[in-house]
Length: 530
Image (cartoon, rainbow, N blue to C red):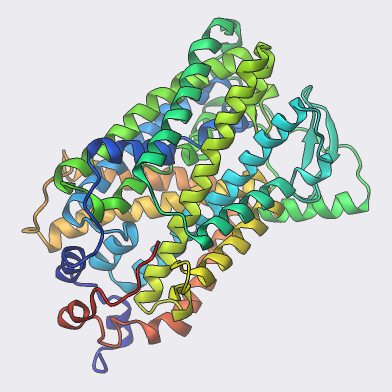
């Protein structure tokens, strides 16, 4: 590659033939059918979005109009899902969006996709941990076990009681940190993915959500749905005076997450759609199982679209019941469904829902951290990250250094960042990544028109174009928050500097080490990763 200029090197593409060869020579067993893939998608989708962010988005942004927000986001995700379905059937690999970008738009875009996936998976795990903390705290309160409120929220964040009254300001979200630490330890020791275990957990989560909808429907007060879209209101006045430690904590939280007021109105519904976009993150996780699908051309589209449709219906029904039981203004807390079941007053049902939410959120944390460590593992093998991130523990056969680093970063974010900050940054990363995926479909249709595509995105090119436009539209809504925009731009800037300082020079593709013959010759020599 010595004769290739810098511009040529950063836009080098990983040959599609190499990706197919890696898949053909892979050691993963093709054991997943359409049902397994659908349940995998549902298991990843149903998590913090529905158990946590729904109430937050309704209270601050959309009111009962949160139901419309879910429809908007569901339509967008349908466009993106159709694009993912085509790519997953044509390139059935485990690298998902990172591999798609490497094959189509070149190394620099693949690197940027890796940065975006760090937000989508790494910070998403932290967001889930904050929601997990809320449900754990609620369940412990039912058992008369009280954690100091200062240790249940990010620095400076207001902690409210059931009546919505501020009782303290956070110092550290300790349960969230402990949750990430526990999951990280499990990943280091080695937790093999099991379709059977995943199916059981998915069944528990589905049972909890369906039970909440069915039982909660009898306690709905239809007048709480009116007005469906509340009138726009100004930001609330500044809070009560705080002492110096709390002022410092509040300043830290504002720097990280931005100070935001209530909006409502049509603008609030649209911004609410951007906020609860997190609820749909996970359907693309089906595409990461492409190398383990029995018949990817048929099963991958069914898994992706099936999971999306089922979850969209459940989400809208859950929102209708949630804002019909509890006034939307009272849902501004990390465990809104717990608030609703407490309002119903059936103790056994409240305990059941909280246990189901905790179990479900625990599995999502595990999957997200697992996914992030494997993305780093793949990037390390491609030479874009230091080789230490691919070092496998001799006994546990897991990338332990990589896992510890990811766990420490995720735990720090979970303990010190607010739910708003985490969800907004996760959504920004996801929306940007999804826009690139939709654009990739167009790119590959032009550059590789004869590629075998068992599933083809319908109404091409309208669907991928609408996917790009809607992703960018919601992305701009989130980027309107100065702190989110500044963090994201600085994050990308630093990431690109790292690429030019390290990844560009150590890339296998850039050094000529990723030729088809060389890679096939070394396939199967890497130690197995659990």
